[in-house]
Image (cartoon, rainbow, N blue to C red):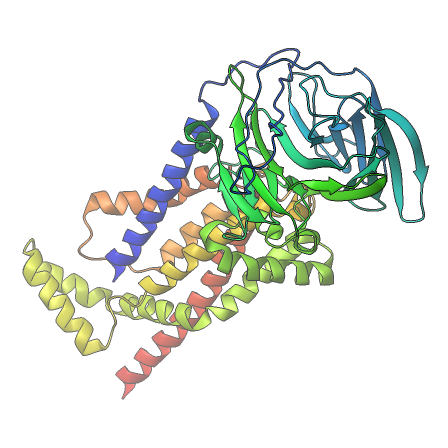
Length: 549
């Protein structure tokens, strides 16, 4: 049992070592050089009529260069500040006013969309079709009609008229206290001929990836994602885009680009039959994911509208869930979501009571410990009984010497006689590891914990402890737990040295993990020590009572 338990510890150490190596590889991989001044290529889908099959045609990406109009208009509320290029009406900058880029520094703010300083990440949208503003590579330049403050939103209206007299109004409605923008096309057909157009929404993004903290281990996903009638949430990585262009037909759906704590998402009309696709521009690191809606028929002397939603902000599960089906899954707890979701719900519940995410982590740790008490109780009873059997194990070792086969048989016979389960301490270790990893993902994915303080020197639970005090305390607690565990008589000197050095190695590794995760492990260890001391004392009294009898 003891060798098995320690084997699991060594397995956990190996896993952490793998995470360290994986992160080192990612952080030291050669980066593609960035252009000082980004060039935006024409990447508009072709706009031909449907084929005889009635389906949306496959998209193409022309290679002609498109220049910016160099004129932007601004739209903002208390949460979000946008810059919109009048050429095409693209959102070329989105500044998140509630989020500081660096801890305890009010400026600069987090910039989600950016088209400057060597970065390209923009939200494009347009209309395709004969005479549409985006039907050619040289897209139309809109004029600003109005920018007004409504009761519950800020409304910006752009206008362009084609040579035939068809008016195109592009309206951006930024809801108050929100990261949601309603992007509406209002098409006024002043001609005597029917007109047909289709709306496209897309993100153009470079492949620059930067994590928010210095923690080692698994990194938050940066890349594209989409939803369709076949799958509520699918990731499509940059490497996938290189291998094959995505082509999905669906009713409704959405597209997004994810990064650490934040998401940019286009949500087209959910009743429309849409095409979701990806394109990687030639001779560029610009990767595009887009959704093209079905044709809109505008009769002569009539008007029609089409509205898409653009979300630019934090991964707020409640908000995203209300915007579109499956959009909340962009808060990705990996394959351990079934543990991560309850952990996050418990964290938010306790935080609402104590108004401190660090205290909430401590309370979650206590809660998990209570839930796992029956398993831990069996583990510590096994440890306590093993401690009581150490003199007998030593006698067996002296009797059988180096004959490990006879030694093992004699040990199993003694375990059976003393009613000790050799595997009694393994199951709790197996249960604790998924909880530990799930909490890691919760801390990595939950924007609420970003820059959230505990107290004193811990001002960001999502980053490493700047003074390394918590990792050292965690190592000490791990050493204390080892002292309470029995030493296997059959363990060779090399294994004993490895186990003795394990707290030091784990301290070094945990020094670079989020301090919130180290806090969880420290509190878990302290509670385990208290529980083990209590059970050991109880078992010793039971054995003493048997001797008296």
